[in-house]
Length: 234
Image 1 (cartoon, rainbow, N blue to C red):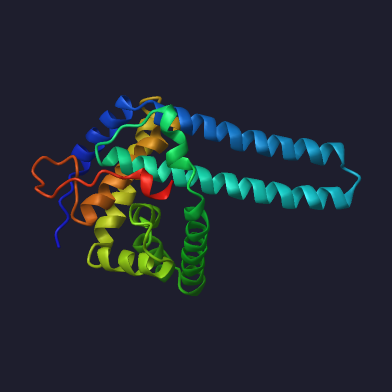
Image 2: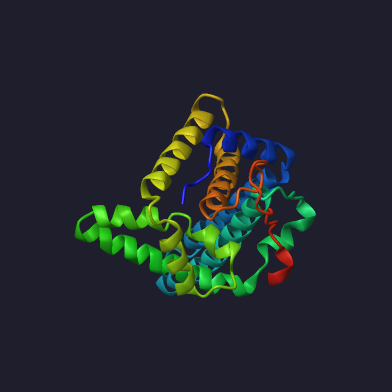
């Protein structure tokens, strides 16, 4: 199946969506601040109890658990918002809870991330090229999972394998173009990571939709747009 995706047009649409929904940038900044504060608190604790090995070990465990949980919540929210915006939706600060707070999604997503990381690591350890191949094949895993979270872990992996079949070079090309566009925005236009990362995620969500045959913001696509329904996981 051919993928109906125009990179420059999708980049333009993603940028317009980001401008219409500055709250997405806002929550990105706040999330980065929260993670930074957690890390600073951990460093201060180590400094205050520098002579106590038991406290240092305990704090390291607590910090890892808190940091991991915070990352899961943040990644869940960012991906779900990106899918929603890519489908033509809107986002405001008042809606943050329904996007970020989805406890039943955290553990499956964590397990999926571990499985993909292990597969890619094994591939890289063997011959490098298999690892790169698997990384590209599963590149859109977060979007596939959060778009259809009712699927099981292995169903998501199977679906990713199927929808990426025959599109390896296309996905690789999209990934490289996205990185280049983000770097150009960061270096030439003075746009920081707090803008380029949300833009990159919306663009990736749009590419995911195109890959499965849905491009909600493409007027020539007769497929009914799928607006992302947050209520199913509240």
